[in-house]
Length: 133
Length: 283
Image (tube, rainbow over all chains, first blue to last red; front, side):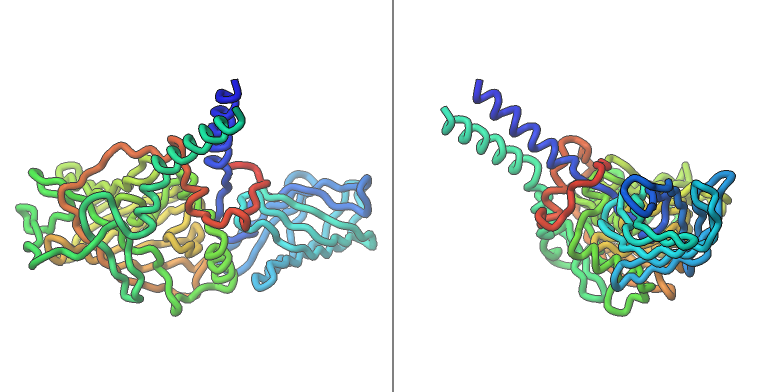
């Protein structure tokens, strides 16, 4: 019985080691990012951000759909993997204002890399987390 | 009983490593189970996938009846090309800042899509384990390049003189169009996706990548491989490098299916403790 268990364990361990992986791609910001921002853990605003690199600039759009708004500034400092974002848009309560976000790009080698940092919107400040889907 | 379990587990593990990892180790060391051949880049980057130098003078370049060199094997022979160009880039490569940072990151986080059985386009196709086989079909006006140690895929080079289609859907191998310039096969490829590394070292690219390859069989055993990379999304200028591939006579394609019990991620990463394995798995 224990021999069987050991065999199954070894096979499973091998399989897990085999498929543990994730893709790498071109410009690290290109893609669709999902997440949220808010002043605390319970008050969160959904975020969907689509970004693309055109060879010189990163452009993009926040929350594609009726309430979409474009990204005005996206800057990547690849020496520190930090990201600065600016836009003018509204949150889920309809509050319109200027948005300034500063974050850190992490897990760069993963297809599902993340950006986390601070998000300020129309006088309200909080944190945000985005994960590339 | 516990000791027996440990012994059985160890034996199974050793057998698995021996069976599936050894070929990659051989490849990583620039060796193949059989044959010979190795590449040499201008920048001193040695190719992989072959061993030793040919002995004695090489035979002349084989040719088709119309005079063009034969890139593949003659009908009565077997043969493949050993790997060439582990790293296309060098100290002079004109990276954009983000591309250089990403390249440096990949040098210490070698988690390449190829190790998860993704097809590898561009020059990376010539660095897959066990070399590549070129099959020329003049009657179809096509040349096929099979990378043996990959996910059982191939590249198709159209030789019919037609231009690239418009609105290409990005793909791993892109759209390759070839023509002859004297004794040199010039292959122009567009339409790459960003799902692979274009060389083993991890040189980044974007969907703007335009790849120009020049293949010249200078003698029977040597294939000169010149690469020009034009990708304004990742580089500030067009850049080139030159390598050589060696003929491995007597070898041919065999059934290699990467997806079957692939152990490459563990082997090629090498430093498991530095890799974050908490993300969603994308095999």
